[in-house]
Amino acid sequence: MSLARKTLLYFATLLAAMMGLFGVIWMIFANQQHIAELNTRRFESRALAEELRRSSDELTRMARSYIATGDRRFLIYFEDILLIRDGKATRPDNYDNIYWDFVIAEGDYRTDHTPAASLVERMQALQFTAAEIDILLAAKTLSDALIDIERRAFALVDHSESVSDAQYIQAVKLVFDSTYHQTKADIMRHINDFLTVIDLRTGKAVMIASDVHKRLLWVALVLSALILALAAWGYRFFLVDIRHPLARLTDWIGQMKAGQYRFEASTFADNEIGVVADAFAEMADTVSDAIHRLEQESTVDHLTQLPNRAALVRLLEEAQAQVDQGNEACSIILLDLDGFKRINDQFGHGVGDEVLMEIAEILRDASDEQTVAGRWGGEEFLVVCFDRALDASATLADALRQSIATHAFAGPPDVTASFGVSTLVPDQPTFISINTADKRLYRAKGNGKNQVISTDLEIIGQHSSPLKP
Image (cartoon, rainbow, N blue to C red; front, side, top):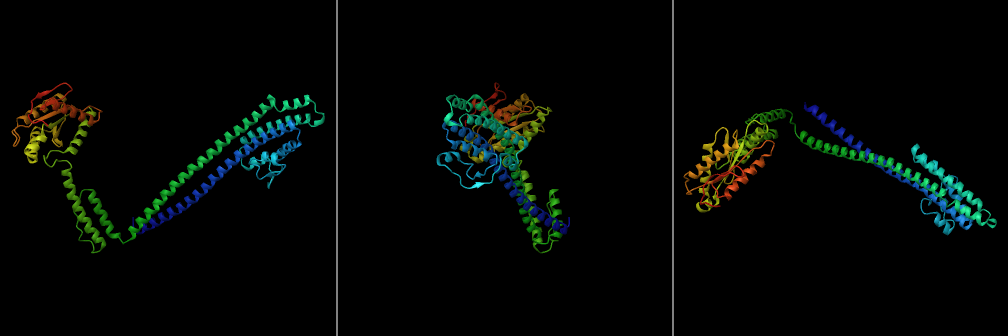
């Protein structure tokens, strides 16, 4: 891609990202407002249902109070409640709070008024669904039925001077009998159903809007990160004219991927790009030397020149893969020199190193294409036995034990080793087999050292060593 096209693509991408970010930010604010409106509508919907419930309770209270006391104030309050609910009278602005208790106790508690609006009109303003309106209207219809009962009771006690005891008792029964209470319960059941339905609908709407809000925030975050990345890349890209040397440097990178690390930087101009080219060529030389050195150090133990632990781990992974495929049996021999700390203490670490190198030579002599020995760590060595079952590996381990025990070392009078042997098990983690060999090795040490243990019962070869750890 040409420099001109890259420049055009850069600015086009940056402009698109910025426009996208501004658009997402606007959508975030709009969605926040939408969530606020949904929550407000949810609150107002519940408040409307609560007002219907409260008006039903207040009508009952005023009716019972009028029947019990004959005080016509309660009859007036009863009619006022109906007028406000049906939108035939203005609503006091404090009507949503505690209202009629203060009116009864203090007289006219009204302050300012809001425009009159019936229950149905307020439902429609809140955009209730048809089903939700039907539920509340069913509750209102039952409430109106109670009003008819209450008016019948009023008729019985309307002329207080001529009301008989029987009329009074009948009026009281009308507003306290089981029919009245059942109707009241049915009203509340409808209101409760409405609250459940409205909570489900508005709650789901709020949840959806909240999820959209989260996604928009993530998009805004990604776009912001993209803009920052574009700004940083653009500053570096356009800092100097790199059109021509870029092709060469890109080619060098490709050669490095292919394993070529020798480059000639003298053909570059004597400028900043030339300095970069010189540094690149020098770096390639350094990387080449480092790779070669690391390849050696990463697989060979420096002292014994045997494969190190990392190399052994890779070999064990290969062996485990073969075992998992059912191709062959593989075993592990883990050996640890007996009393090696005392060798270091009595003869010095230099002699200890000589002993380790001689042990390595013994293991190397016993190795073949199917048997690889390496240094596991410290005075521990590990032998990976490809295509060799447990019994054959145990025999090899005992041969190694005898070779070590009979070897004439330069310093110590006698050196022995304890061995643990295990086999790799299909579909079992390799470390379990290593742990098994390790446990058997330390059983060999606990049983007197200079021996091989390849099972939980068997001891192959035994010789007591004077060098106790």
